[in-house]
Length: 118
Image 1: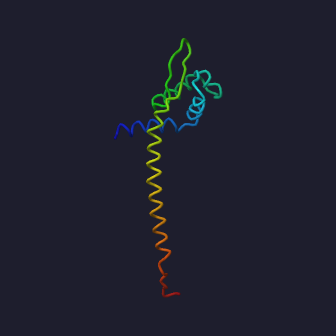
Image 2: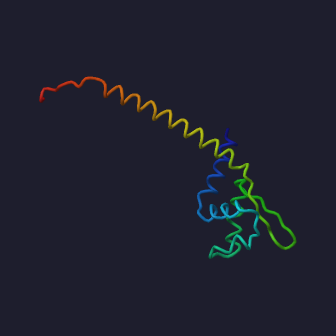
Image 3: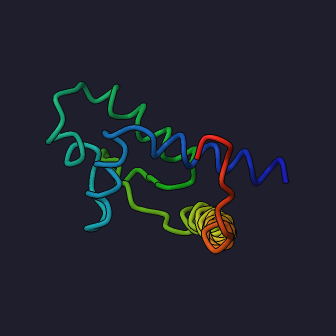
């Protein structure tokens, strides 16, 4: 369980940054070189490489050298565990809200007691 939690921490940590989310969105269109990924950002390549390393450690991206160019592509399987966790959390919260709704409805049906000041 701790290993799964650590992996989820890495995935959500990688997703926490808007630059990394933008990189993932771009890679959703297909693989790209680091230079192509850097174009929309006003940052040096070493800074972009730090973002890519975080995405790689989260298991969201894989990169490989092709000649002198580093190519990155999505690794969508990493999102499966995060998606599964989110689905489980949503189900738990929906169940809680359903119980709360049922409780509120039972309270509304009960006759109101009149206090001394009424």
